[in-house]
Amino acid sequence: MSRRLALGVLEGSLRKASLSRAAARAVPGLAPGDVAVTMLPNPGTLPLFNQDILDAGWPDSATRMVEAIAACDAILIVTPEYNWSVPGGLKNAIDWVSRAKPTPFAGKPTAIWSVSPGLLGGARVHESLRHTLHSQDVHIMARPEVQIAQARTKLDIEAGRITAPETETFLRAHLDAFAKFIRALQAAETVA
Image (cartoon, rainbow, N blue to C red; front, side, top):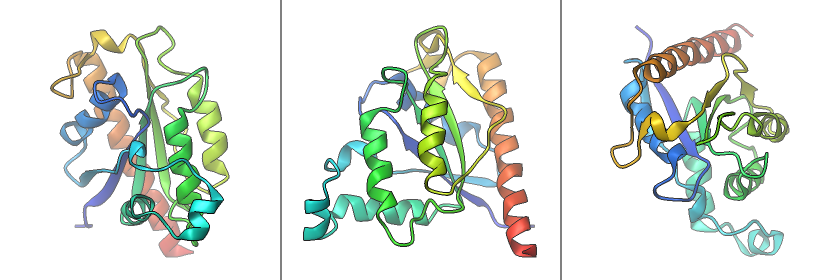
């Protein structure tokens, strides 16, 4: 039997009571048994990226983020959509991690869940986030897309769990598909 996959969950929101954070906290209870889930440091722990700060030495929070991502086999980003795009804190985290040599994002299987109280489920964040992630040479699982629309009716924010059975079923199936995607990429790398 193969070892358990290490899945890191990166939150896109800084807000403690956000819908996307609640969805992120639900992941350990939804993941298949062969996946060990780790919550990555929240992007709010990082200073705004500034080359002057980096030139003076890596901040401890940035080092922790880089090390946490490097220790994972794959990344699941669970994020809201801000102004039709990527939240600033999440983009800032990607900017910091991208400065590590080598970047731990390179070759990393990655999936995206967007979460929104609106009807579109944060759909517009996918394109801009994928564009940014492609610059880091990640392998994005494009389908099925996950957009949790009208999330207030599907999540328990305090408990960090999914309350809508059909949403839970869909998210479990997505995580199963993502585990297969990760293993297929690992197998391809072994052969190469």
